[in-house]
Image (cartoon, rainbow, N blue to C red):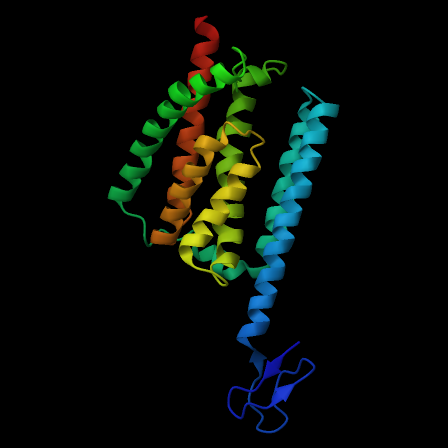
Length: 248
């Protein structure tokens, strides 16, 4: 590990707390910090890719299984919380309301109304064309359970905004912005965010949706706006599915 004294610039091959020449506290160099950030980013990407493969296996092996769905959610949460714990203090600042005002809250309420209806009536039409009429219905996926609407809201509208915003606009965003530009950070986090949703066609809207959430995170340094938009967007799409299911 590369360490040096900021006062006398003495270099040390092993980790020390104080300089042996001048007694000043010794900190990690910028190079060492960046290497640590890059390693965390790589580890996060690998963890997400492994998680994607495991989820795909679980869905094939245990279809329509509540316990499997709960374990998947817990597993994802554990991965995210584990990486978050590596550098928790900067993440906690993202839950501050200092940069949130009524104007931004209004924007966060209006925006998902627009995005959800666009996704439902345009992207679903694209899905219909490419899948010969087999269009996914999120609500229908939970009909095997008692109280399907409750479980659909929990797994579709509540847990994703909480865990995914912490994962991509929190943990990954904080690490990436230490080693690259804000623009590239927004793009990279949006790409992985879209990748974990397992759908090539859905990538058409999830990627730009991730760009929007990443921009808001970068501009206002808070996760609340993204969480509100993410929650309302998913909830509206789910309720449209609910309405559509019982209308035909």
